[in-house]
Image (tube, rainbow, N blue to C red):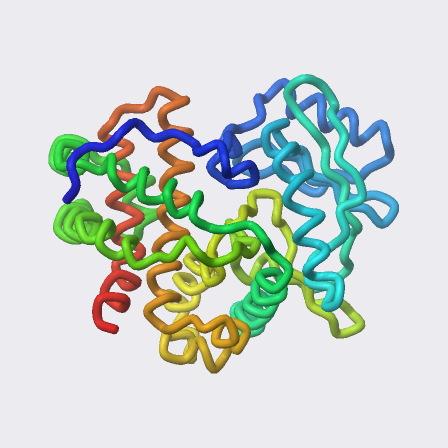
Length: 335
């Protein structure tokens, strides 16, 4: 395990990464203002997520509120994503982004009529995502080295003191344990040893490749099947530029939890030839799935720091991620 490195920092080269302040929630009073604003415009409110982002629909448009940090990043990220998807219709069109005040922005997308994906659509979602990433790489001129440096920089801060600071006997958060799907003993017996092997695996990542858009929340619920037979991947507002093959962690984890067959790593290249066309191996996909989880950890770490939560909670989240993705590390090590 490496010694403690420098404090986590966002490298300036990554202007479109999810490692910006996109984990911040919208305050309750600002959320209420957004609701009032949308209702006055005749928009039908659809829902509100855990970060108090408001979703609405009106006149063939879909609205979603964002922090201004997220809105600025989306304004740069989405047009290039959309350009790569034009030939296949993978993503809805971003119509406009407006600032409502000094705290919140409002993104307006074309509304895609369709059925939300189910577990049976997991393979199609993976295939579409691979094709989109492959198309984007062919047009990209943005190298991935900066993002890989951020991943390694984050991992360098996982010293033994931090990993051992979470004591399952004296400090237990049921929400973390339930989310991870493990008990307190597994967090220590599985989580910490797995985290120790992460630095070695990340060393296998290459930053010499061009970037592709990475979906930060890829799962079948963000796949839409339209009445005319097209499919679209939606909800890219937390996306970032990373290595092709990144972004599979949630989709594959849920598929394995649900018993979906044919989504083991040795089958992915046949199922999603877009990855094979980029020269990726099974081990590449396993390691890049882990790298996607590391980006998520960095975001969690940042939000926990902002909320002044204890180091023990930070360590618990790290162990929880490790437990959920231990299968990735084992797979990568065996190939």
